Length: 614
Image 1: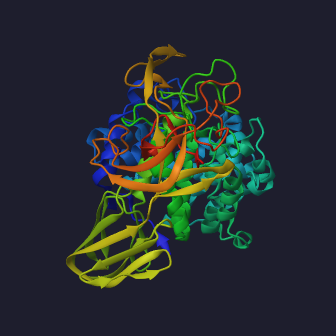
Image 2: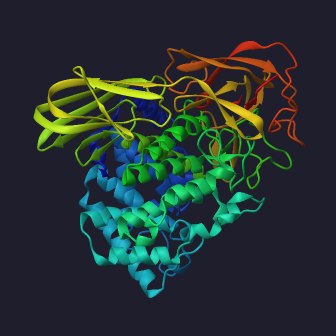
Image 3: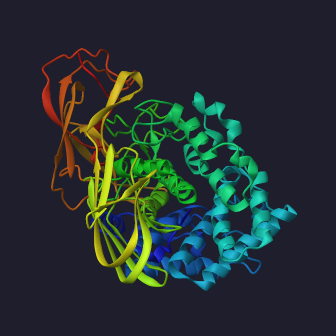
């Protein structure tokens, strides 16, 4: 069984720490200064958004601040939490609305601020915040029990998010009302298995039951219910796995996400994927892995984290997309009908608030929470869940233990895990073996680790400092996709042919929100040819030095050499800035030549799914 270490026991290192620093220096670290919905929010006494945006932002900003030990960020996070708690009502109600308005308030934001306070307590140990969370959730229980508050709209479809703060409180001090509230939420909440048939053939209709973000959140609900309530009917089948396949079999992408722009869009490399759904998918998979220990969920976290997440955010993290495309040959406004099923024509731009502002606030959680899950506590010791550079400082049987992962994973497939103890202590070090690895080995002082399912295990007495050498193996290869197309993959990363882009900067003010450099909007138009196919299945990995940006398009840390040939490939019907889903023919229209593929996550414009030429 797995458990989480305290949030204060884990710190990012290497490229992962650099990624968080870039985030702090970019949009995430400045939203409270430049974006009215955060800066002037009703949560802290202002007159702007008093619903999900401040809680969304804090859900990422709090761990970002504390993982970086940044005094300025911490002070600003504390200011917001204190401001929210200062305004908490005497009966425990915590959201910024009048008592008369409670009946109509969508309590999705209530559950979300509950998650935030639980997270804050984990980092700070704040008794005030814990008391505020306790009173808030108990108030919600009373109001739902008496019928004053009922789930509606987003709260009805995100009811299980309320289980996260309840699990935190129940682990601290279990009380019966907490389980009663969990059952009330479940009874009033949407039952997602009822909607499965609607996911098979998505329509051009906006509905809450096909909303991609709701669905990426939903995947974890069975694991949460089982952890808190232990209800037997959830044991009849692996509900998270079942729901995952019900979604991904009909809407999955090559980079481990689902299409949804903003509702489900089906299988297709020119259907959009909303950035919020990427962040929530990562969080759901992290929760399921922590609750079940099933390695496939950690694989799914990495697939999204190393591909779809960075692809939708500029390298400096000052701008982002609302919707990304797997084959993305331009990022331009659509003057008339957009390619997206249910989003507007600006959703593919890079900017401050393209599409809707939810992603502006919510993408902030993805990298910090990924870093927080680098290590987990196993019953018999420490689990290295992801071989990214990170450090764990904890205690085992009263002895101080430091575990440091030195690596450039996923850009390299080797790592050294250094274990240092103050005194002799026995425990098992478990290293998760990713599902993509053709083979894996780990050794310390000439002793090889034993393979146990998804893990390499070294169970020994540790004394002083010991280094564990870890090697994973894979070969670059092509993976088949629908429509007779293929993608190049190596380890957990997908690779794409980059398209040189021309940038058009858009600075303007709309609805009181200013866009100006560096948080302006950008249109990207292609300057290089993109119509190619794979002329050979042979791919060669080339390691690069990189630069200050881990997912740099200009200086990628890992590339693939591929032999490509031009093909006859039209635009999608009715568009001159979107590719058709596949070429007209696999026949090459010119000579093949060696070209460079870069990590999908480092690309802005790209073709990722290509045909094999003849």
